[in-house]
Image (cartoon, rainbow, N blue to C red):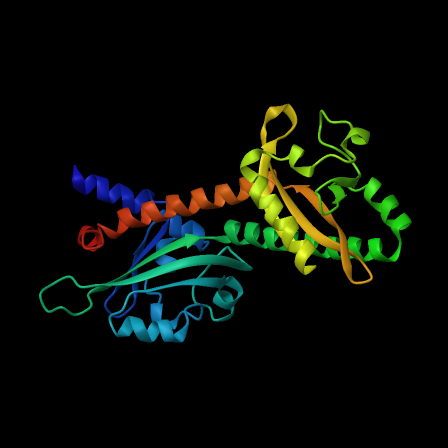
Length: 298
């Protein structure tokens, strides 16, 4: 029945759930929460004081006492837990958590009867986000380094780009390709020289490419865009394109474009969005039973 379903949501939920009494003392937690915090037995943590948790910001604890729901991201430090002997844990280091704490009002006197804590482990997402940040910073650094080398020595630049994993090419104001280090599968490098760069771009992206080139030629500032295209084996692939101005006597005479395959990065971003959506959906389901779970436990 409905009660069994709600019990299953509580016990089997992938989200960690904790129930505290009106004074903030822990009285129960589900299996996911035990695994998340490295707890072997509920008896090891029962009575844990919510308001003595050093991982919760003090202003959030104040808001909880004022009957407010709080939500925050926390870098949960297990070393602090061990240092303050808060409870026995098998974990060490840090986890990145999304925490939602809701005061419950069960009874007729409208005072806080319990606190419901829902915890999502976002460590994998945070690590993936940091990898994306590092990737973009590394790419930007390489673009700057290569542009500098191009200005300083055309010959050195040619040697560099011939071996680069990215597709690097330059175009003039008429979008004609002046140089390209390699071409996509199915094209011949020598035949690409003098061709319009739009010949290698799907029509739906033509305006984006034209506007980006025009911006660089007019302002001398760099630009960036992303497009999709058919890659090897006719599979859809994503590419990032960074544009930089090549100047002579302060005049932009051509534009360098560095094209990198970011298909794997896009897959990672898509997986992150799907994970976030699943979490939001599950969280919405949990919120509908906030008043029921405590009743099942007491």
